[in-house]
Every structure is written in structure tokens, then in C-alpha cells.
Length: 397
Ligand code: BMA
Image (cartoon, rainbow, N blue to C red; front, side):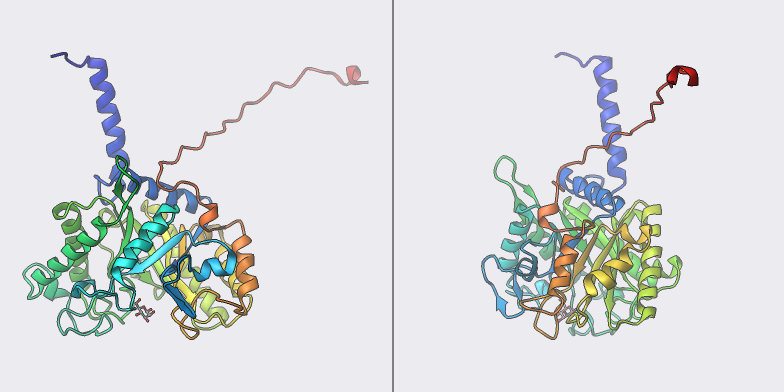
């Protein structure tokens, strides 16, 4: 048997070490190369002040249509698909055919594969029903302890995570021999700084929430062996300080994306002051901790203001460089004319949305580079001073 030369061994160890150090940044040190690349590209987009535009349930339905091949209210509005696709798993825990918003799970998988094939980024949320009562995610009866190890419904929760693992493992891209798992940004137990979900503030003790988060990640990563996941921790916009924002934060080693869900309910200046202060805290905290800052849900229901996209939303995002460094912004779903977040048909905000689309800060599908390939480091431009020619004023004349 030929032995490796000491030189080769040193080189190999060096390479392994570099890979290890790079992987260290992610929750999962065994994350697939595409998952790692996604993280790096999102980080790069954020650093460059580019915001990927996303839309929840985009390919499944919009206002006035459902299940139409090529359908997308974003595409109908600007001719391009979104860069990020948000999907919701509520009801997967009941082995239902469709999620809580009537999106068929089998079709959802097809749409996820389709969006990924086009280069899009996939994110999943899960409005899990209340384990204690059987009510919905909005039934705020305390239930977090029930599903922790030793809790009455822990085994049921594990079975639900098994369902999640089956679901995401069935999401593959590429063809043999390049078939691979689609990277997913998983965003469980969101908006925990608010009090409207059973896992949220006042219904769950922060210590229990953190244990639940860590258990969930460890189970999916180490027991189920999922390595295609980035973990997104999403707050709501009701905090004044970084400490408050992080009340439920499970720790840097458990989070990849630090998100905020922001909804406008009015056009008052205070709303946008709050938007800016929460965003600033979030972006600066995320950057200091090596996380990706993202606007994981946002919108102004029905978009009642014709210039909302550019004159309000984008303007406020671009007001300060630390606000614009959000990797992506995912608008909520277009369920019907009363519950919709992107323009449809001749919506009054359509021309402004098109303007928003044209703005160089927003990235839609056509603007995406390959987010699943490790980005090349940008060459560092060092100053190379050139010696000034020795000329005297007399010779110039
Ligand atoms: C909410 C609303 C609900 C929906 C839920 C889960 O914000 O859109 O109608 O059921 O999200 O997607």
C-alpha cells in the first residue's frame, strides 16, 4: 500500500480544517455544500444591500385563481417570479392531504421543486396545532412543556418531526448522478416575541422555548440526519432592545437566519419609526453574531396605498445602510381581495410594484445568480500607488 507523503497529509489536514472552520458558522457542521452555499450567497446579498423578494404560496394560488400552471401573482404583476418561495406545513402533523390553507401537500412538493429548479430559495413555516388542546396554533393554552422530553405529548411531537423529515427528504433537485436534497430554510415557532401562538410570550417560559428549539434542531439534524436545513429564528416587531428581541433566542449555535416578521396596519410615522428601530437592532445583532438578517414575513394587507412599495416600504428600508442589509423579504399570501399582500390584476399599487421591481436593490428570479454554488471571494483591490513622474514646472511649459 502506498502511503501518503507528509506533504499530502499536511495539505489534506489543512483543507479539512478550512472546511471545518467554514462549516462551524452553521448550525449543522455537516450541512450539504448547497446548503452552505445558500448561506454564503444570502450573506453576500445582504452585505451588498440586495434584498431577495419572496412570496408565500406564490405558485399555488392568487387572488381569483388556484392551481393554474405558470400561475403567480408576482409574475402576473411584473413578468418575473419571486426569488424566495414561502410554504406552510400546518396540518402535516395530521397526515392531511392539504395544509391549513388548503394547499395540497403533494402539489406543494412539486411547486417547491419547480421554484428550486428555477434557482429560487425555499423557506418553510409550520403553524402546528396546540398539542395540549388539539386547537389551532392560535389557541394559546400552554403546551410547550407537553412536548419537551418527558412531557405527555413528546412522542407525538417526535412523530411529527418524523413527518417533517419525510417531507423534506422527498424534496430533491437535479438528476442522477447529481440528485441532491433541496436546501430549506426552516422557520419553526415564529413570532415568539408576540403572544398570539401557544409557543409565544407569556404562554411559554423562555427556558422551555429554548429547550424545545434545541431539541427540535438536534432531533432533525442528529437523529433524522437532515443536512439540508438552515434554521431561521423569527421574532415579531414588538421589542425595544436587542435583549428583548433575544428573550427566546436559543443561542448562536442553534440559529442560521435571524428574522423578523413585520406587518403594517396603518401609514402612521410611528409605525415606520418602529419598523426602522426593530430592523436596525435585528440587522446589527445578526451581523455581530454571524447570522443572516431577513424579513421573514412582511406586508400591508390589501396594500391600500398606491405608492406603498417604493415610497414607504423600500424608502424606509433604504434609509439607513444597516436597514438595507436584509437578505430577503417574504410577502405574505394572496388568499383573496381582503387578505392579500402583493398586487393582482389591476390593483392600484401595481405600477408602483413594477417600480419596486425595477429598483436595483430588489432581486427577483431573473436577478438571481447561482445561490447554490459557493460564491467566489471578491478580489481585494489593494491600492497600488504609481510614482509621480518627476517633472518641473519649467519643463511643462
Ligand atoms: C395567517 C393567515 C391565515 C393562515 C395562516 C397560516 O397569517 O394568512 O389565513 O391560515 O397565516 O398560513
